[in-house]
Image (cartoon, rainbow, N blue to C red):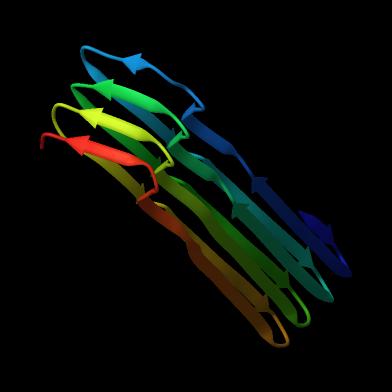
Length: 196
């Protein structure tokens, strides 16, 4: 917080970045025989909770500004690569549950002049979820299931409040939110036998 009988300026910046790899894998393995289920389960739930705020109070002018930048770029994979296995059933599951919750606010008050307040939030999620079997020989008495999902979400609130006692009060707020990514479930090469 900035307070002055003349000019007051206050600013705040919050930046958060998450980048993870989560892998459940069977690689270059032979002769695996299971009486029960073969399950590979990769799950990631990265979370960012953040708040950024500024307040400026001045007699002859005030400026308050806040900025928040949050990004999550995670990779989750459940995979069987160049392997041979037998089981009663098989399941490969890859799931993303990323979440960004951001609050960004700016405030300014000038008793005898103008005040300007602003806030900007940028939130991005760019994840990958993959469940795959590649060049593998798999035999299952029951089903073979490949399941890849992404349940990522962004919640963002930005605000600005400006009061000019003898001048203008200007408040500007903006938020940019985007969720990108790639979700893939598939089988490439190899031989599969499933009873369903």
